[in-house]
Length: 486
Image (cartoon, rainbow, N blue to C red; front, side, top):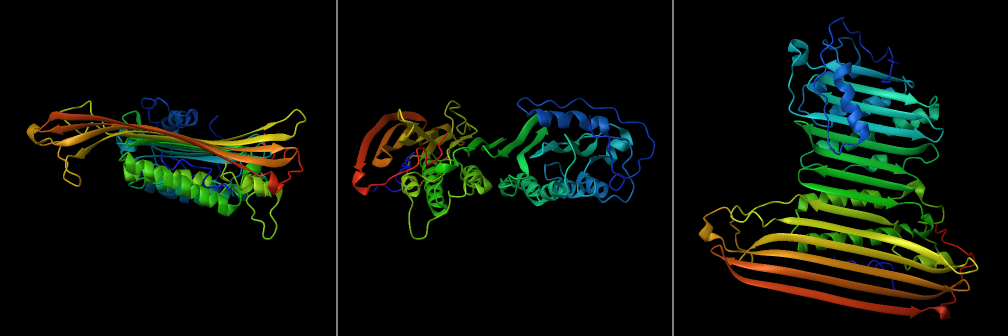
């Protein structure tokens, strides 16, 4: 019997006018600060661009001096280096919604801006959290820090929040702040868990966008979205870019919790192996792996009541069929390091690493509408290039004298695909077929005293298929579409 891990087989490779009295401190009359040049970022999300655009216009020359705890927190934030952490302000805004369910806004000018109206800050940052309830009410939380100061705003639209809505949104406060704090760490961390598994009975969707910019160019950004159909996460900074999507629309193919954990571990080992072979940056790859783990380790209320539950004594026909799959939701994942020209004498030799992998599950029916085939496919692609010392374990020196350059330069690629196909006849699971194909190549150049002395290309190709007939097991799937495939 082909086990669930073998089926993975890729181990090789408008701004709010409602300002609540409880949070708005009085502002002494003063001339408004002139808006600075509008920050525009290529590739920035619409929500982030909107947050940047309104920041300067809402600021006033004097910092509110009342007893508002939010104003005090905002003033403390302005005394710290620019980042998306905002010193706990994200959490405070969600908690303040309890007393101000119709929304509110605050603006605090930086001390330097209040003095001369021409403050210059090293970094600008913006955060946009958008939540939609099942009743259609939308809540938008915006934070913008620019040279003139800091703006915080909470808006509601589309109706009134219920007490349950407010309580549920306030319950995201710690998770929201954890994401912001993680992004502000050095090195950064993806701490998205607190925004996953939100109660689907109350929430339609949760979307978060963050950005840190310098001199008008984005230097770190994150985009996250979660609803009942899928989860997506994109991240970019000066060192790496990655994109993740998890498809939650076919809950019927999900396996038990233990099966999912085993499959996730296998995928992560596959990623570690690719990173080792391609000499990936360990810290950057660990950041990507933590995001992949978060999006795929627990599907929460998106799972069906029957999936994810291990039967204690009997195993149903549906569970028997699922056991040949990975048990995980389908996904796509891509990671790319920023290229580095580490050899000053040969700038065309880049150190690079990129890795894409995915899982897709599809079903088909016969002329009577009964399930006839279920296929789960995986694909993985590795592309990398790197320098190594000429002597294994030796010191690599590319910045010294040209005559001392002794190294090998590697360019490698790997393509791996697998497929597990379940065939059914008259409701019976008739056979399981697994196939796997691997194609790879490595090109190595050897340099001694900066002179090319050898070139070698090593290809590798392998394909294999295995089929197991199961009619004797009489695994009968009574439902025409027991796994609820769409």
